Amino acid sequence: MDIFFSGSIRGGRDDVDLYADLIDLLERHGTVLTEHVGTEDVEEKEAEAGLTDGDIHDQDVAWLRQADAVVAEVTTPSLGVGYEVGRAVAWEKPVLCLYRPDAEHELSAMIRGNDAVELVEYQRPDDVGDALEAFLTSYQ
Ligand SMILES: O=c1[nH]c(=O)n([C@H]2C[C@H](O)[C@@H](COP(=O)(O)O)O2)cc1CO
Image (cartoon, rainbow, N blue to C red; front, side):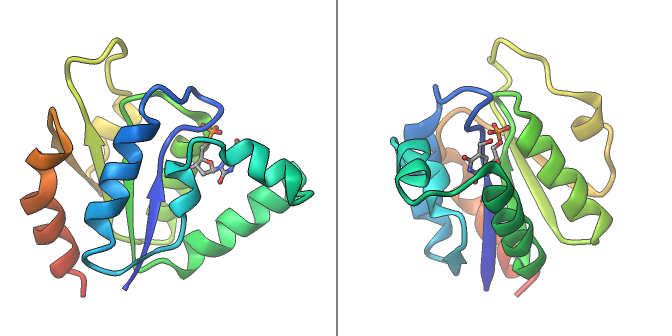
């Protein structure tokens, strides 16, 4: 199955190592279309490849359209992550959001209040393996 992983880039990169760990877990269940989100130097690589913001947007929306399921780490607030979740919901894709409640920012009501989004609160990647498996296998 094709999985779209969504995580903050310009919203802040404090959690990049955590994103890489989550992507490793997701790769046990399918192909992660957005592995770059867990890469330390993603923006440098995109710039080297000559990608404009328009290219990045269009490629990501195409991957999102292709995805069978979307997993978003929403602890670091990000406009791009919110946009991707919103579009995935509009396309009626299965969406799982992961949130660490000890975080500085309270989770948006647009996520917590959304019945079309499954929400899992956790502390460490090791804690979400079972929840990811249950979510992904139910849509395989
Ligand atoms: O360079 C990028 N590459 C990219 O793939 N994105 C996508 C994937 C992420 O899930 C999301 C992050 O959005 P933001 O940069 O607003 O935090 O947007 C976002 C950017 C920068 O906005």
